[in-house]
Amino acid sequence: QVQLVESGGGLVQAGGSLRLSCAASGSIVSIRAMGWYRQAPGKQREMVATITRGMITNYADSVKGRFTISRDNAKNMVYLQMNSLKSEDTAVYYCFMNIRNSDYSVADYWGQGTQVTVST
Image (cartoon, rainbow, N blue to C red; front, side, top):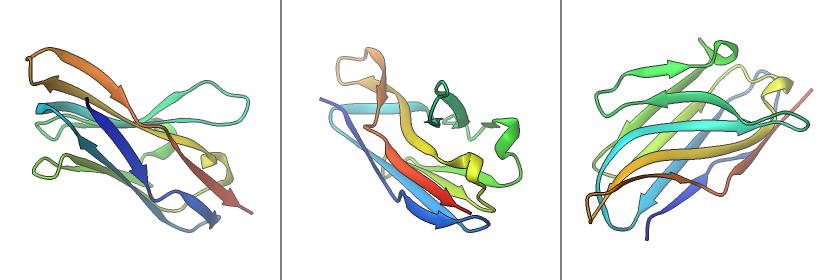
């Protein structure tokens, strides 16, 4: 079974930085797309950043220039460096990976989420 585990969330002051990490484990053949999504109080879940195996990235307009997504294929990990944090960034952040399993099927996997709270 494939599992994703996030880490790095917490409480930070506005203008500060935080780095999220997500590690995948299980019967993984390869990981195609990776990404981070978030859900703020009273809002729907939204895409924050994605990155393909070919290192093509995509960011939500609200985080461009402030957040950076990266991946380490050897470690089956994806990261999100968050700088210049704003109170609007407060949300539960979820790790996402599109993975080819040992039976060569492809499926989406999600982490349990990690809370990021930006104080003012």
